[in-house]
Image 1 (cartoon, rainbow, N blue to C red):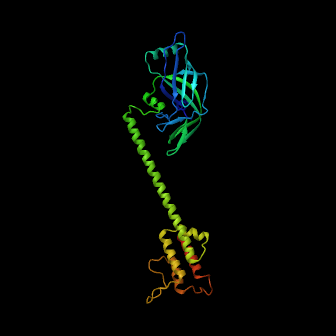
Image 2 (image 1 turned 60 degrees about the horizontal axis):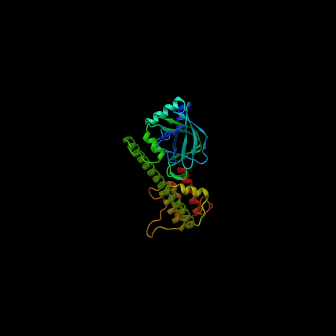
Length: 322
């Protein structure tokens, strides 16, 4: 059973620093920030560098919505009064006046860089594979990427800087990390190597598939040509047998049957061959003996044409050799 806490953390995403403007006299302290800029979110501990994008079409956000501290429901520090989901998620609202909210406001005034975070609950998750393209929030994204659809924002929160604030800012701004670490570089090179390997494997598979199709088409054409040459319609079983033959076996069979059908005789001055040539499979001997006797009657009765007998014998030999 998955850990409920870990399952929950999969759907928590940090955003850039929250703004806490100075209060006007007689008014509550306010906050504002961009919870999501509408682009690819990468660098997440679970979803990885391939990234996630949140479909804003039909997204559900309660208004007003709670603003919590560090995702704890018992630590209420503010109210999100307004949400703009036109291509991004901008939020604004008021802090409460309880001690915890007052402490956060004071720390922000002193320069502490708080961040926003949110928990998003997707109704469905779409995995876009490499080489595919998907349009989300009016933008085009190339796979691999994960798309959250039919989303609902379950909470907004203020938290201390994440494990890597630079990555969090990059993730929601859609800009490159201005200060990449060596680890970032190593990971990027590894991903590029993996992508190159995947591309090479895809090209290899495509070439093998194309070669296989070419050979199949050529064999089909050769079988049709043999039918025409022999003036014979092959049965489905015969066609399958010839299709499954090795190239050299089919070439030998095709040559012998074509010569046999045409009644070729050996050149003048040479003794007519009445036995199989050396190194010829004994199973093919019938082709040569029939060529020598010209299709005479066998065992006192005509067993079809000599060509039909040759076909039958050759097909039976092929079945027995498998």
